[in-house]
Length: 398
Image (tube, rainbow, N blue to C red; front, side):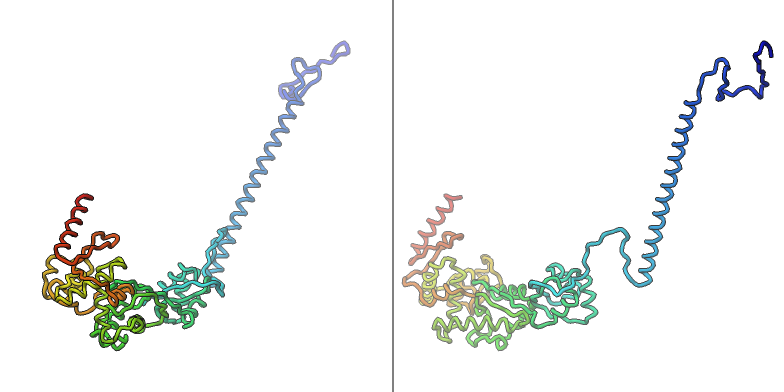
């Protein structure tokens, strides 16, 4: 130390560090504020990292707790014999309605339907919520539902639906419409489709004249005696009862028109031929007269529909069928009326037979199949003229 100034010397271990400011030391700039800012930023980043770790730990813990709770719920539900719900899922399915129901819908139960089939019909109609639930309740009840139509409320509980099906008051009436010009086998098929009565039952009833009230004049054959029209049929009626109502209407119609009982079968037979051959009401009385004129002169009627009926068909007869003498309904080979009616006649055909037009017509030719327009002729030559004109018109259109 000299002249009042002090010179300081350091050993290597004692030398000033770069981050320490020594007053008066040459070549060292003040750096403390910058270092402090760096350290502060590092501390903030470290704190954020620690918070993120803590947040992730909390999420993991919550997920684990949720899974454990769900598993516990499932186990508890199974131990109680319940069907566990899916945790977190929202279910809108309804397994059964509460009832007591509202409105009304008609459901037809076919013969032989089991609980599953009935349940499917009821669910589709909106009577029950779930076919499987209904089937289970139905099986447990030991119920036996008879086939037929039922008027049932909508949205019934399965138990109430079973009770309703066992209630005779729930049986509904069916509207049965029988068209004119149908054969007996077509009518039986239509009745079966509408009422669910087995076709075999209807066929057996049709073959039992006493059961269906068929008059003796019918000769045991139901053809022509199943009246056309609309009927209200209670769904618990059997085959014989249904057919009896149709036969009774025919008897009533003939009686109301003043037809003597001994003429019933003849009138029905003639009317059935008119029904099948003529489609225009205004042509029916003229054709009825053609039938009378041919019968009077012992000419074959030559009605194709009768020939087809004799072989159980409604199609046009083939040339071979027209030559078949073994067919009693072959009006090309046998003179007179066929053995029975061939279809159910309508009122217009019956009236035409009872009041045929006045004239000497012997021939007819349908010139327009769509409209039913028909040309009538007295002589064969006139018929040939009508045929030639028809052929020429066809050729011109062709």
